[in-house]
Length: 97
Image (cartoon, rainbow, N blue to C red; front, side, top):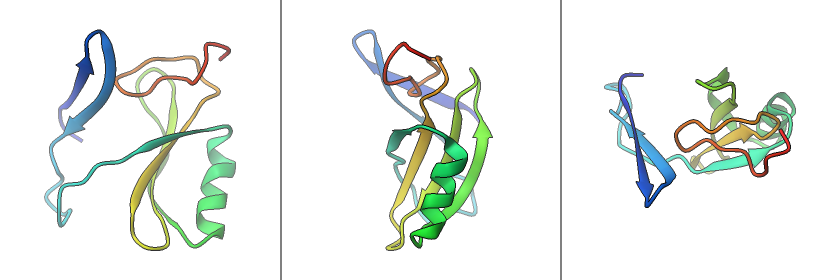
């Protein structure tokens, strides 16, 4: 929630940041991994002992994301690559859509 600021190396957007929610104990980075089928990916996370923190949700531009914790408590995020968008640090692996 709140403002989201992209950052780039040259012309390529490589990340983004926002204000830490007040109820989060610390600041952190989410590394995003491309997946095919966000719903199936969410089920794999929970079936292997991980936890979904947020999502699945559609972000501006149409990409579907989830933010997760692995079984050891390490945060990560997944983004569905079946959408052909480039929004902030969310971009498809290839242009096939």
